[in-house]
Amino acid sequence: MMSEVQVHTVARQMLEKHGFAAIAKAAEQAQACEGRGEADEAREWRHIVDAIKIMRGPHQS
Image 1: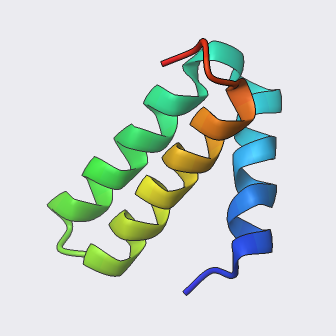
Image 2: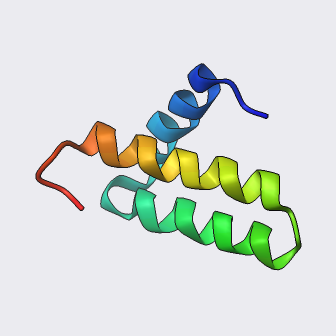
Image 3: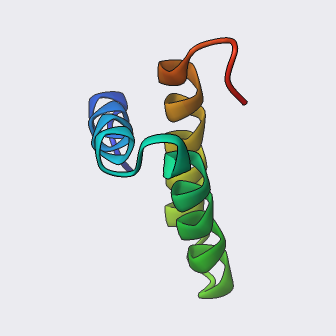
Protein backbone atom coordinates (compact mmCIF):
# COMPACT_ATOMS: atom_id res chain seq x y z
CA MET A 1 0.00 0.00 0.00
CA MET A 2 1.30 3.45 -0.92
CA SER A 3 1.89 5.99 1.82
CA GLU A 4 0.06 9.31 1.64
CA VAL A 5 3.33 10.98 0.60
CA GLN A 6 3.77 8.51 -2.26
CA VAL A 7 0.17 9.07 -3.42
CA HIS A 8 0.71 12.84 -3.53
CA THR A 9 4.07 12.43 -5.26
CA VAL A 10 2.52 10.31 -8.01
CA ALA A 11 -0.42 12.72 -8.28
CA ARG A 12 1.93 15.69 -8.68
CA GLN A 13 3.95 13.80 -11.33
CA MET A 14 0.76 12.91 -13.21
CA LEU A 15 -0.33 16.57 -13.19
CA GLU A 16 3.06 17.74 -14.43
CA LYS A 17 3.17 15.14 -17.19
CA HIS A 18 -0.46 15.08 -18.34
CA GLY A 19 -1.94 18.42 -17.26
CA PHE A 20 -5.73 18.48 -17.54
CA ALA A 21 -5.75 14.83 -18.68
CA ALA A 22 -4.12 13.59 -15.45
CA ILE A 23 -7.40 12.61 -13.82
CA ALA A 24 -8.49 10.62 -16.87
CA LYS A 25 -5.10 8.90 -17.14
CA ALA A 26 -5.14 7.89 -13.46
CA ALA A 27 -8.74 6.69 -13.77
CA GLU A 28 -7.74 4.58 -16.79
CA GLN A 29 -4.99 3.00 -14.70
CA ALA A 30 -7.54 2.18 -11.98
CA GLN A 31 -9.85 0.55 -14.51
CA ALA A 32 -6.99 -1.44 -16.02
CA CYS A 33 -6.03 -2.72 -12.58
CA GLU A 34 -9.64 -3.70 -11.87
CA GLY A 35 -9.77 -5.54 -15.18
CA ARG A 36 -6.74 -7.57 -14.11
CA GLY A 37 -8.29 -8.29 -10.71
CA GLU A 38 -5.82 -6.04 -8.89
CA ALA A 39 -8.22 -4.45 -6.41
CA ASP A 40 -5.57 -2.94 -4.11
CA GLU A 41 -3.74 -1.27 -6.98
CA ALA A 42 -7.04 0.03 -8.38
CA ARG A 43 -7.85 1.52 -4.97
CA GLU A 44 -4.46 3.28 -4.94
CA TRP A 45 -5.06 4.75 -8.40
CA ARG A 46 -8.47 6.03 -7.26
CA HIS A 47 -6.76 7.63 -4.27
CA ILE A 48 -4.35 9.27 -6.73
CA VAL A 49 -7.36 10.54 -8.73
CA ASP A 50 -8.73 12.14 -5.56
CA ALA A 51 -5.35 13.74 -4.79
CA ILE A 52 -5.12 15.17 -8.33
CA LYS A 53 -8.59 16.67 -7.96
CA ILE A 54 -7.54 18.36 -4.72
CA MET A 55 -4.34 19.69 -6.30
CA ARG A 56 -6.24 21.14 -9.26
CA GLY A 57 -8.49 23.12 -6.96
CA PRO A 58 -12.21 23.47 -6.24
CA HIS A 59 -13.17 24.89 -9.64
CA GLN A 60 -12.00 21.85 -11.60
CA SER A 61 -13.78 18.52 -11.89
